[in-house]
Length: 126
Image 1 (tube, rainbow, N blue to C red):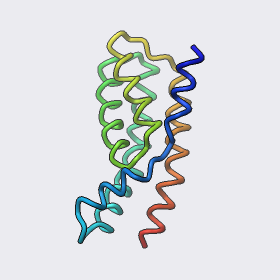
Image 2: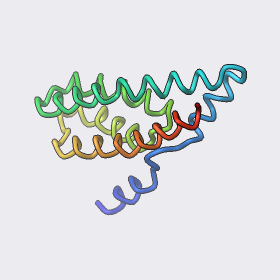
Image 3: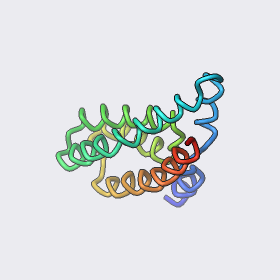
Image 4: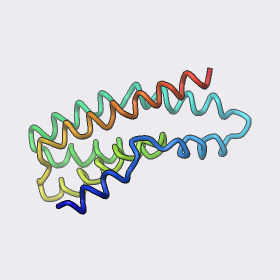
């Protein structure tokens, strides 16, 4: 429906304030923390999304839900808001085996958008 679409548009691919919260938590070691968290996210998420795509293709609800939950949590930590929201939806939908293959393109695209932003964050941490 058109209202759903409007909601999706309102969620940014990347919300830098999430990383600022991370910064605030560890005042004295903040650079290392952000670098580590972002670095790890960029390293792990592509593999996790590949697994998620495979789970969607296989209609493996349990795997979908588990992987989506993991990616959602890490995405919220680094501020990958649109991707986190898609993963939340997959988690919900997988209860009813209702995840459509089209969602694969959606989360891959959302990851690519945020990957660029996070690469920039890493460079600015140097």
